[in-house]
Length: 487
Ligand code: PLP
Image (cartoon, rainbow, N blue to C red; front, side):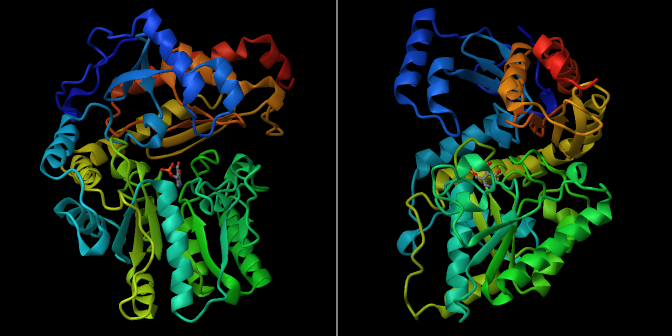
């Protein structure tokens, strides 16, 4: 299918099978066996289980830079960096070496009972150095959901230990995503994460999304003012003595890449401070250069009480998440607990040394390796690719910040009406894109999400441009789509 070479200067040489080496595809027989075994045994996250069995798995085989190859030898531009996580791109040899070296020397060290490892200690110090000044302490976990879960548990402990045990209600945004742990999935405000799981809890509440496209006026200041007013109103309704914290993503990712106006995050922080509730920024997607700066909240000088990280922390090479705490929250927990008593939160793999070694190397690539600078330099070109599709008959809205972007498809641009879910447009467009050598996220409500690796180059932007336009054109040619369009 399509062939391209990754941006050489931002990628080191690797022993991996690359997108330009001959396909090492599985034989037809083993391919069939794999698909059967998947159907029989592997439970896929956030998938319709029976529909997945019928459809069959798409097996990915290798990657280099922004390019992927599947088991059939198809070459694909991955415009979603895996699951918005492979920020350094595939095939970074120095990351592999860092993991290998740590595995050889010490593959595991517990953080329990006062043990630790050099890599984890250095990574904690590095995160404190590069994150907002308010954040001074780091708890490591296995991923984003665990990081959010730890944040919730720490907040509960904080208020109990500081003599305000009534502060138990949590606020987040409609269409927010904060993972799928048994409590965190209730801060997530997407129906699939609640249905059949008895969520949200009575202590979990949502505020409207700061979505300029769906706002009555679309005026930036009005969007900000309405959000602040909604926060104040909800806290007044519940009583400030009962509200613990407000969780938000600086840009809502899984809810459809909703980009609030600049100034929104700072205004929400200021209101939360005034209302005496903790302000938690979930930068699992927006962290590590995704929106331009190292962390999105640094764009507005925001200093959260807690911050959750994952994905770009290790660029998906190994699993890891982190919960960063302010001195106030850390000290409140530490000093309010009975002297010598353990704070009973932890997992076997907290502060895993291999993940920490990978994290340190990945951050080196963002900084000294030039990836952050490259992402900032190429962002206007990425934006231009998406903006160039604004006049396409299917596109209602284009939004982006840094290397995070979305197209929202509508059936009627004037009324901003979406499509009948029975049309299955998201699945259709995802498959058409794949057939055109392009991977992106097709959300159920026909929002297309893009988050390419930070090693994105001009060549990949050209591929994105041509393959995305062709995908939209191909879908537009389908009679059922044409007839759904207004006028
Ligand atoms: N928080 C945000 C903002 C996320 O986008 C995600 C995952 O997409 C999570 C938390 C959960 O992270 P994980 O999937 O690593 O558990």
